[in-house]
Image (cartoon, rainbow, N blue to C red; front, side):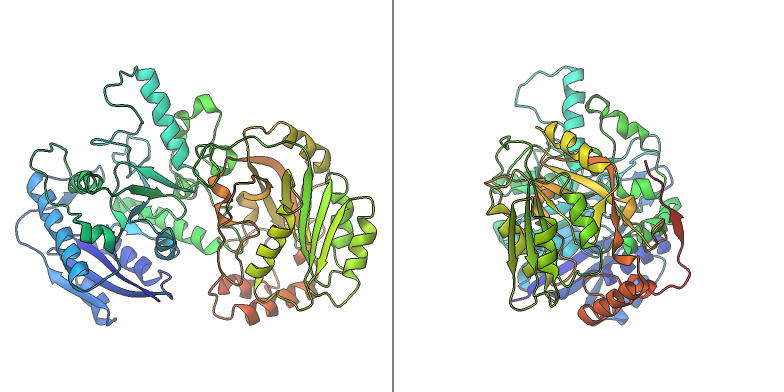
Length: 558
């Protein structure tokens, strides 16, 4: 059954910024959603909202009230009491519409955000009553980027007990921990949120509202909403998987274009490899985030989730994770008709650093399984061949491989495809890396798409080597796997491994599957057949596979 969702926003916005906001709404993935839009046009001096409504049958636009004059400039946005409570009344009107018309969810979005297309289906998948997607903003040009979610009170970014006296040093330490947590993709309980918030019907029926709480002195309608929600027994969550770009100033429109280019570059399972949500757009848009880095100095972290910032150590029961045994490495690999390709070289290298191999053969029609047995004859091997191929529905294969791997009681699981291998000096370093990893549950690496033996591809559509993605995960017995349930590009690991404690390594991997022209042609036709509309990937990237003159960069050995 499709969820019925109302996306709503009160709009008083500059034309160029609103144009981008509406563009992002039009690109939201909503195939499993019955979606409607409702806006309040608060006396804009352009006709963008009416034009947006004329082009669609699921859009309503209501006129705004006359009182209150909203002003913003390149420094900040200026809010006064009358304006705040006017916006609160607008939002409560949206709540009324959602209740009266039987919507399952109300998605309140500020009109200066550019949303990732995956935002709505992802938030819905979390099954939370109130959850906001986190974005980061310089509220003033001289300030560091900070999130629109917080822990408690007006805008406190650290945890403390009631009456607990904290030194300035301790407050700074706990603030760093909160920012560190939000830098890692995950879903976290918070005390305050707003601006990009999905609210369930359960919460709406319980009585959430933006109306002023008369005996509460906090500024801003979102604070009053959050306090009331908590008083009603509802929990507030912040998600960091698909951060929007906040067009807080008109001057940031140029940076937005680079953010959009970055979205276009994400392909296959690179959802795991994205830059930390706290500053994905900061990196792409040349934000000066060294000040934010300073908040993490004592932990030796960088602003990439892959460079060591991690969530609170936890298994999937929300409990602090135990420290399983270290050392034993189990390779898990899908194979299908690999004879004459790269598997011999890949598995020979793997024998230098693995202790066990788990191979799932997807009904190969050649001697792939015999090759695996021959190359891995000195390594304990678990091998299974499917009678019928499932490559058209990758998620089934990935789940099957995962279950095979964990059934062997591994310590570390490394998942490689049959055309992926580490750089030459990696095997010895992998052993050392894992032996020193008592506080890490997964490692991310960069993967380079090799177009020739000596060059990798590097252009707007081929940037996998710029992001870190998990390849090695510690086996945690209580871990409950959650998957990206798509038939293609579903990811090699369960999607919630990134809720564990993560780190990165400078060791690199080579993706050899693009080396030979006929292999590229086969992949092109495979993607066109299995994903003809680009539902799970990027059509432009599929087409670019056949580019006769791609941009190539020499591979340099470390």
